[in-house]
Length: 326
Image (cartoon, rainbow, N blue to C red):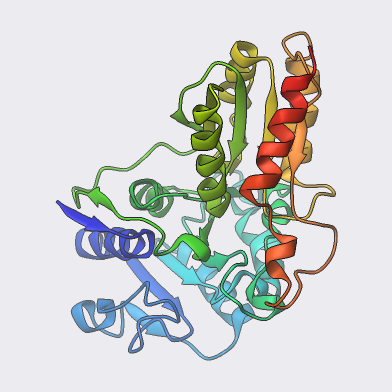
């Protein structure tokens, strides 16, 4: 069992599936010889050949269109968008074809396709390299949207995504690609999709987050513990379809909830979670739900990105606000 980073766990999962399923192929810009801009596909072209790990032209719409066609004909393509900000030319094929294929053909065809994209800020990149627009895809029926927050979950969730008979948008929070290492056994054991994971149990407040914000959320939970405040931490993991049962069950226990996301506030996943809590758990709440989010502006250039992104201090302030309500 090896200790690996999140990006290494992604590589490990793809390596496993390439070795065990001849229908799996990887395609994208620089994914072959160079191993990808973040080296997520490092060594795979050399191991499996350039007909299984395919370097494509700089043409995202073509990548998505080819992937949809291959998926409907029995293959299992893993298509990479180099950054989430480059995924927009793929949207027509994702929304109009991949997401609708099962419905359009009344189940005759499925679309077992994974589109991987590094996403989020924090690496001092330009604007289109720092997008957090996961809510766009969460709004589309027929798509799964998965965001890992640790090496273990990256490995298991990506295996499940590749094996899914339906399309999955798999967003990799690049700010935590190398944040931590965990022991991950390359045993091919997948993690269940469509469910939240309780990362840390608590009694006083529920902290809900996903992706790179798990780092600051866990830091906040540690600081709260030093003050005698017990925080339950939930990793949403699959943001669509959303497992509200796990979140609502936690809030029924703690009575308070703070939702943390890097994405802009308006019409976001945090909005959906808060609305569902008002609908399902209003009588369990002892204080209004608080949200700690990015701002409703384009991600600023790197000198200001730290001012945009939620911090541990902002999370602690929100927790203190909900705890003050008796």
